[in-house]
Image 1 (cartoon, rainbow, N blue to C red):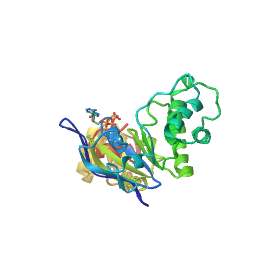
Image 2: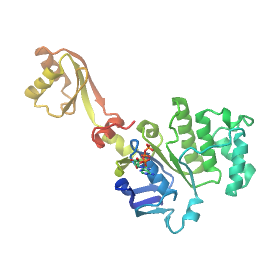
Image 3: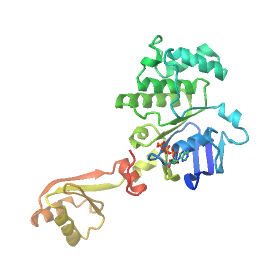
Length: 306
Ligand code: ATP
């Protein structure tokens, strides 16, 4: 699989602030790449650099194996994107809007517009004006515009922002089918892990401008830790007893008397008995697994994504 995007030491400074800091990121052909990070992590800045909208302070970008700085025009012809939501003519239909874009981009109008609208599922209401579209429909129309010229690479900045769960699901399904049916490579940024979890093949985790990790979803899942979760009448007392009787140190105290133990996973019976014998009531005891969100929260040092 060849590299569709490869950045080396990519950095963007705003004044003294490093919005993007020495980013080495690789997106391979055919991948759906989830670009994850909290608000302000530097996702939009990175995508804007990839689109040649802003200039890196240092470092380099290669797309399709060529340097963006030296072949910008040719490269960007092969890329589609939605970055900031930019307006459509509200009093025109979706097709009329796209026809204007197609003309500007120099792509054959009719087939490209019909194709794109069908792919995003907006072909069923040909007469509806865009002003009467829901936010989700407008987002889909934005994606239709981004794929009008059959790009090989699609960069989507927070395409599900502001959408309700049904809208999110629709966009997700659509992105999946673009990748499968059109063999597009897709980079999708998000601050919500669960939005890309079911879609992405690989994720890059950005935090304060730095890429903390670039890893396949498969690999990520194997890393989520298992633990025993106990709900008890007194977490302080339970913690003290677990430490003194079993030498347990790898645990966390959560709110409402909930403890998570990361060791002694197969000794739940013994632990339970000991706690009860010492007057601690155990309301719940179950083997559980970190949600991926917890993994990220740990990775970025206590904060949360999403
Ligand atoms: P969000 O999801 O909120 O858009 P993001 O991950 O896309 O977040 P960026 O928009 O890339 O993050 O912003 C990264 C950092 O750079 C932020 O601290 C932001 O305030 C700063 N920043 C972005 N654009 C500019 C600018 N034009 N001038 C100064 N600082 C900027």
